[in-house]
Length: 358
Length: 127
Image (cartoon, rainbow over all chains, first blue to last red; front, side, top):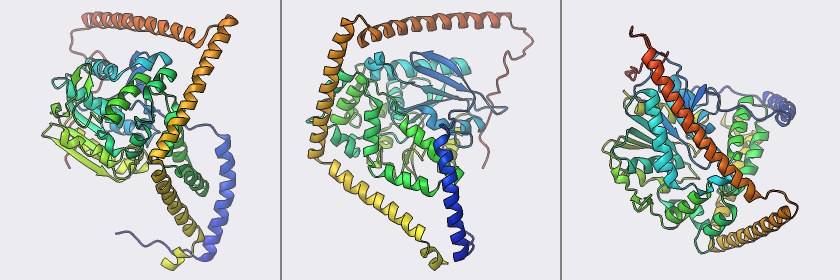
């Protein structure tokens, strides 16, 4: 039960409106004149580097840690600092402070020569290699993997193709499997009008501007509305700080490796092979039924990038007995980062992973 | 109290902004989910790719003429650098592994942990 809000008189309301207008002018100038907020601040060491890939190990902040280390796998379309935004709003920091031994794969910003990287490179080379290094560094023989969005796809492909591998638990956030659920993306990449071969052959990596524009087009009016919302809340330091961090991340797109884009477009968007268990990686069929380890999939109720219809089949397809889908309020990004994630996703992940990490 | 809130013109305006955003998104999404839109986008992409291809070719020829490395030349150098980088990493890995092995061999046998790493004994808090 919430306490009733204190009554505000008309005079107080007018005073508040004037005060906020003044604050908006002052802070508006501050907003324009200050640089981007610092992100990704949780102390870490780079354990391994290969090309643009970096494997980070976050420094422990507790006297003891869970036995099983956790490896975070990021998406290929965005930078990983969304999981380590700022102190107090960082999933990585939260996990470290709760006693998890956390590692993260940062794919980096693909270079032009990385345009030939395929899903095989990620699923059969980079992830197993990083997993092995995590085991070696931690001295353990198993690890948990957490994948966000496309990172979840890579992690599930890895898990499916390495059923006897060292993975003990797998948690995915908003991971799409059924292209039919991604109505707009599917429509825009319709094979009758979208020549993916020509795109990749001409451009190599898919430029970040193209990806940014396509994500923006999913909510075309949001940019204007967000700017209005920002102006309305310019007096509120917390809102502005949070807005800037998310805005920075959303605009900080990276190129998408060309050959992987070709594969994803043809196999996943056109032929929808992932949901049919017909994907082939390095000549091996990706059958999600091969995943027998404890599995958690967290989806967001208002996800406009990966609508629920696209993510829904994942849990039923996974072969584990210990599997669970959790739907939480929020959108694609606010599920993992920001004020609401602190109370929704993070405790759920901590409790699910904690009891399976001893 | 409810009347007080309803009287706030800014609250009404905020509601209007939120509703307008929702309506515009829905309207534009419907328009973008059509074959016509995809076809137009495909054509625009074609034009963009043609321009890009022509530019690459013309620039490549021009740079060759004035004896300046082209994009492809720089990419080739980048690729060779990546290969060197990978070899260096594997050498570095080998050196590190040898160093670790040497440190383990030379470590005192009094049972002391070689590095200050937290114990892996944590258990979930009982609720």
